[in-house]
Image (spheres, rainbow, N blue to C red):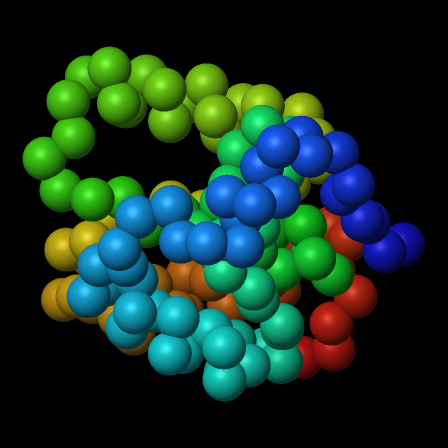
Length: 128
């Protein structure tokens, strides 16, 4: 069963087409791996609108969002991210969250964790 998320705010469409903020080095590094379909042949896009949010990277076939968190986040930002994750899960989207440092210093581990998640998602349609 392939799942498609169509729920998003039309006002986000213009924001989704443009980067929300300048990409960090970690995001650029992860994007170089994701866009080359090196993760199980999955197609990821950048800046995809879901519900009222724009996620960093998204695979439509798997309903999988990947977020890269900037360093120096305060408690309010962490609470907002938890709420965001809950709302995305209610839309049927699995969310993986990594820190900038994790991507920069352990990219192989991050990619292994993404591959593992892809393998065990219940609605996986991608052949590995």
